[in-house]
Image (cartoon, rainbow, N blue to C red):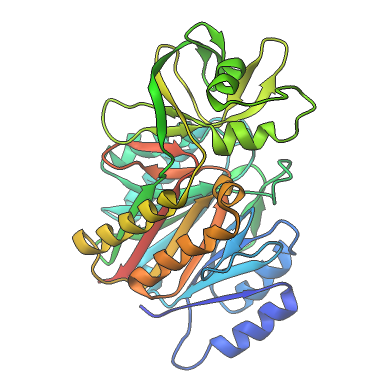
Length: 379
């Protein structure tokens, strides 16, 4: 499979880029599109659709094809994969029946391919990513391969989108099912945030609403361990501190812990809503702000993936948390450059509001502050 990555800032630039890229030697059949919500999504789809290319699309909070991150742009990974080897589905869930819809999509994929591997983009801020994963796991089993991200909207936190040929949805999922008998798909999800202190018990929570840890309001105990000042509604930096710098690490019976940051504070009882479920009675540890080791861990993890499971690749897709670039800033380019250099093939990536994948040694999970790297190779 040949692949090429392109980027631009307008529909006109897209027309020009496709004219230069498509040739007798390279006729793409499939494209992965990561785009800012500020772009003309319908215009992008119309141009790509006119070339007869199947679209897997998702809006972002930043996008990239190499180590240089962009905002307000579109990026694309074009592939000339045999159309018999993949299928794209876009399904909506206005009734919030996430698990039911996901299971139906997974069943369609199983009808087409005995062993499908799934790439997924998810829109709508209220969507329960864990319910979606349960639906896929119900059909594909615990060992099913699925990687993806929650769509972004340039940190506005208002409306996100997924899209494919002729469809754009602000309340749905777009899924790319790949036939694993024809396309090798391997991925790794790595975080790197370091834990501090002893395990603490979540003494009161409901789903993703965390009230108390060790009997203390979660806002207060997080502020105590992080040494935070001005913990009040007037502090606009609290979102960054709770979500990016001082998230909870939810311990698991098997596999690496998963990250849970505080997105929205309820000041009436100093609780917060996390970006994933935190069961009452579960064990958590606090984190410290990231340093260079965070990026090093991601790159080493991808290098290990190449060594153990994927010596060669035709293309790479990256779903990286929007919180990582907030925390790491310009240093983020070092991580992306390290990932790109592992296989040195065309790459496309997005900054997401949550990552869907498998933490090392664990089950399929809604992840946060994580880089999910997926390598593809036609057999």
